Length: 446
Image (cartoon, rainbow, N blue to C red; front, side, top):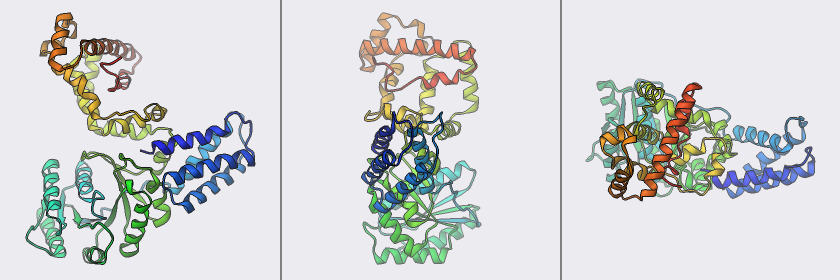
């Protein structure tokens, strides 16, 4: 996400390195490069010009402190202006009403149905009783997809496969929700391959009749500036309440995320990455600006960890670390927890400085597979007590996992080093930090 933009912005800021003060000439050169980077990322030209004009004005109006270089100051100003451009503060969804009705709109292929499932998962974690409603009467696969997602996340799906009246289905679903005590109704509507009058009339009528507490427009971030234009068209008819950006983990240049708020004057409320139902995040403009500038997003990383890691499990692991008993079973358990947090490359990108280090690297959940294969080829006794694993056992483990003896040896060495590091850090009161030293891409390799 935003890899190319981050790289180009970093290159732009480097033009100020070595200069002792900000001048109109060196700022103009840097701002020109920033504008070019934004336009290359598919940011609307007028938006890119407006924000870079403000950056230039701010930079020339500030004195550079002795402790701050011109480059650092311009990064700070750019972060501030990008944050303002994307909305300034996060905005939660409105859940008023009993039940609260959330109307999901967007083009076909934008990820509406998957988002509906993710939103249901998000709200369920908050303790809300949720009902998903299948109102895409034109695409039978959409109803089946929603049912499959509902079974996966343990949320009931209301559908009337034979009924071709979306309004009736939605109204019946709301009545059903009231009878069954569901506090939130998520209505997944039909999409089209392009904006057309039939589609707009149907979704507009649904909004008028249902009077939802929140109408969300779901847009595929990979469509770039087209996403912004489509959002504008929908907003003119629907006056929606907020935007959801999906597929931000794809080959997205990021322009939609940066400029959509400015164009439609509606907040981005959620961002979605990956196919996992847990991969949905509230949109924080300030945090996103930091990530765009390669500054990481530690706060979001910590929040994801808090949502995923079980407190009792953490206490159990810490107790084993203190006794130097952390074994391969514990390591497997920790890997499973990390995978639940989301896309691995996305998580690494939240660590300051890691964005540049992993640029162009192929890092995903498959990065864990060689390690898992090796560990699962060990006997229960070997996983419990790694010191049992001698040369002949290593050869057997390599054959059983389909990996090389060298990979097994490297994993054993790195696991041993990690245990030592955990023991040392535990003495300093920070055993948990040792887990962060484990990069799944490198475990088991040179």
